[in-house]
Image 1: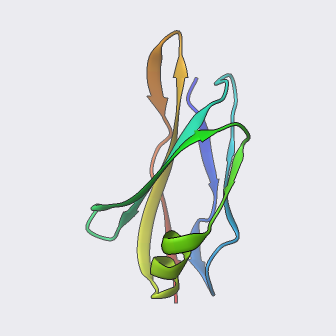
Image 2 (image 1 turned 90 degrees about the horizontal axis):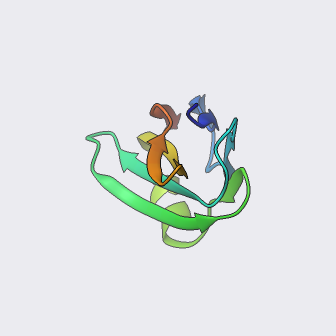
Length: 92
């Protein structure tokens, strides 16, 4: 089973406080990947031990500029990476 990216999603105002997902049957640690509207990677956050990740630092600064972004979460099952579907959100 794949982890399920939940929040942020869709249009919104301001920088989200965190990325949140449903682990389903995927154990930690997790990795979060954030991409711009052209799918260029903006950030990769590794070694996350919970089903959420705060938005801080340079990533928060970049997201504050606004635009369309995509993100996903990845974990490992039986030594193989499993990744959620991309979730798209917009900051106006």
